Image 1 (cartoon, rainbow, N blue to C red):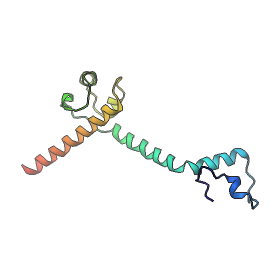
Image 2 (cartoon, rainbow, N blue to C red):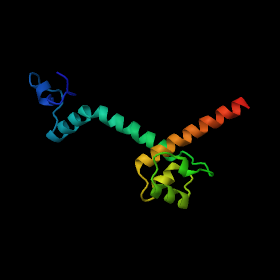
Image 3 (cartoon, one colour):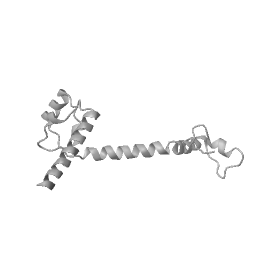
Image 4 (cartoon, rainbow, N blue to C red):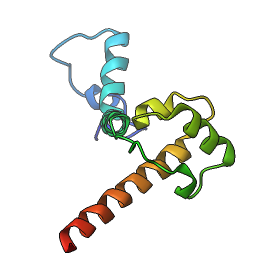
Length: 122
């Protein structure tokens, strides 16, 4: 039996043998949760780190938001009025959706890649 499986409990594993340490019900629940959700917690930590990296992505000063596909007129207007310097700043603007941030990030990466290729061929 493996404690990571949803239907397996600490009591199932220790029913035939006396545990070396007496644990309270609260300690048992805590240990079970840590083990059962370890994969989810690691995934969530990676996602938080990825989002933190996105916050630092610089938005070019000469950014033409109208060229970014998928942005609504309202989002374009708000970005043009505020002119955030990073995606982290853009995220804090009311009405800027996660989808808009993803589209901005993709556009910025493509723009950077195209500029590097252009410099490499000149």
